[in-house]
Amino acid sequence: MKLEIKLQPQPHFKKQVEKERRKIKRIDVDDIGHIILFLAALTGIWQLIFSLGIFPKISLPSPAMVAQSFAVLFANATLITSIGMTMWRLVISFSISIFLGVGVGLLMVRFRSFGKTMSSFAVGLQSFPSIAWVPFAILLIGLNDFGIFFVVIMSSIFSVMTSTYSGIGNIPTIYLRAAENMGANGLSLFRFVMIPAATPSLIVGIRQAWSFAWHALIGAEILIAASVGLGHILLVGREFQLMDQIIASMIIIFAIGFVVDRVVFNKLEDKVRSRWGLNQTKE
Amino acid sequence: MLSKDESQSLQNILQIKNVSKVYYSNGGGDSVAAAYNEHVVLNNVNIDIKNGEFVTIVGPSGCGKSTLLNIVAGIDRTHSGEIAIYGQSTDSITTDVDRNRIMIFQEAALFPWLTVRENVEFGLKIANVSKDKRREIAIHYIEMVQLSDFADAYIHQLSGGMKQRVAIARALALNPKILLMDEPFAALDVRTRQLLQKQLLQIHQSTKKTVLFVTHNITEAVALGDRVILMSPYHENIKKEFRINLRHPRQLNHPIVDAITKEILQESKDFEHNEIGDKIAATATF
Image 1 (cartoon, rainbow over the protein chains, first blue to last red):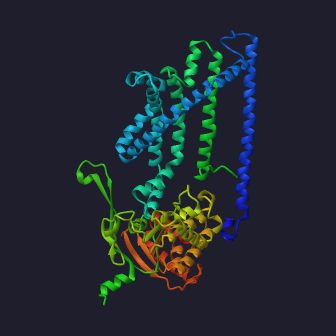
Image 2: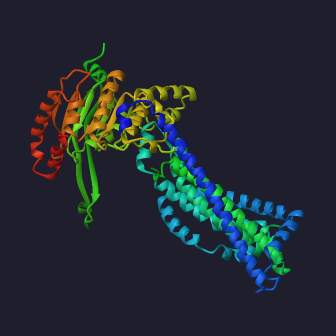
Image 3: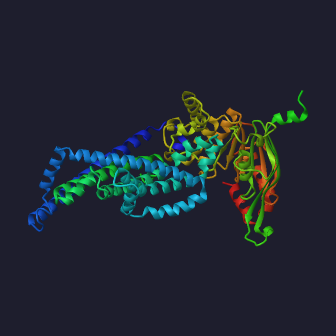
């Protein structure tokens, strides 16, 4: 309440913000240290099991053998093209999924009875295993990229849909009233109030949708037998008993998932939450 | 020459004419008649407000004061009667929301994804005011509410009192003719409330805006208003009007304020036999 009465410049204010920021950065560095330690321990255990000779070499190669396979895959550009191809598929199908998901979500808001029915339906479809779409996609569309797109879209679109629906549906009426009172209506209300007000919920939904899309994409690449892609390396690896390649590809799949979720979405969600004032735990 | 009627309406910036409001709720009966419960909120209310006047409406919860304010703001619809601004019915301008009356809500209703300055600029942005111009206007009003140091802060970084000051700046930025305030200081602590009351009076003095201010706090109503309208929950209408002949700039704790507060309390004695009455009496003194 001191700030209220004094009404004088508050030099601490900016300093405090700066301090908080620095604190967050330090935690980041600590986190990375812990992750490296964890990975080192994991590799150690792996090496130990390998050295004990429980499994034949062909079933469980050593970390060094996998590293070598990495180098080979990298040198002959298989890895780069595979990552590129998989990411390209992801970007295309995930964009379509967000676009259509937000669109249908808005229709659900506009037509309430449709929204009610669709949202209970969508919740059911969210837990529908993505791989179960594959035979349907193969027969309907074929063994091609479009079949893969279909599986990815069907696996992720419902999360986008429901988060759009609930995000916009749960905007406090007072925001809309205040905005309308200040002259916002139709498009301006939508653009300047509804979209930003629903953003935190939308980001949570898109993050979940990304995770579903990623699962579906790798699964579909294996089962629809794409010619290139991270899933394809797994498929070939299984057929030719190239366990080192399989593990190398798995590591890449894990790393991409980790980076996108931890770095991209975590940062984005954190930024949005703190800006929207949803992180009120400090001090 | 203007006719008497016309000159009257020019003087009265806001006219509330025979406004009634009825809510229907589903009673769950079998017959059509029994299926609806009729609940009268406002019954034929008439108020004329002069340009630049500071009018406060006070009454216990359930007397319809907030509903009345919402109707004036155009947020709620009347059942019958009309709201006129400079003699022109607002019904004729319902499609394009006019910004001649801006509402300030109890919970500031600021947008958390915008900074203080962006919040103040919001209505101007909607009205397609150029970027430089709206920045200039926003900074002016942020200064007026003494929040210049917080222009780039986000809403969650502010205290409750600061939030209400931003809401006031945001309303003023649109240069409305009438400020509508729905218990804007009810959620604040006593010291902050007094500070904001003082600031509001200063702003009223310097901008000469017409203010319609709803509260359930009698002392607040008397301290701020040129005219206090006491509403009764039983008649869904005005019980009595009090003119506060105190010159501006005012002192909030002037003896006359106390005297009139007591008088209004006396007047609302007939509410006292139920809990509504207790509530209004309890909030009259700090």
